[in-house]
Length: 208
Image (cartoon, rainbow, N blue to C red; front, side, top):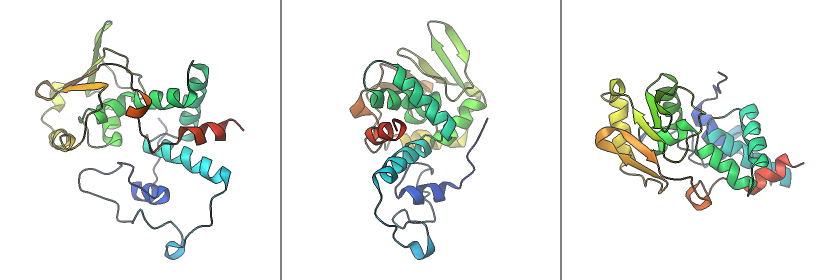
């Protein structure tokens, strides 16, 4: 599986904002308010293309995807009925690793991806209960996401649950902390998905 080895601090600094790449109170040693470059020199005003590129890069890095993966999601969103931007964000939000993070079973999306890849998550739906170790697996309405018993005592999981209490759980999800499982109640609406992602700029970029 292809991976991006760029330091997380460099990624957040390049985008100029917190992308939830670090755990708990840990933050990048680089200030996200200072742009990359010698002495943090301010870059020139972005062109229209530059703004579109930055919007795409931000979304791609937020969800931990490479270019080829992100482009594949865009093509899938384009083929669906309805708003392409909403479809794109919904596909990204419904990735299993993102849902595990949203539920508070992992401290970051990267940690959630590792938890899924290491067979720490089971899915219960109409097809039965099975271990799913594919981070890009698309959850569906009614899916139960269950943390396997062998992982429940891990310190990072306990810390993740404590951190999750400080965040607001999206209304399209529900969590049973005592039993380490969550449920996808429905698909997310646009106002329940990241507003900092400018899907219109992304569409403009790929439509050229």
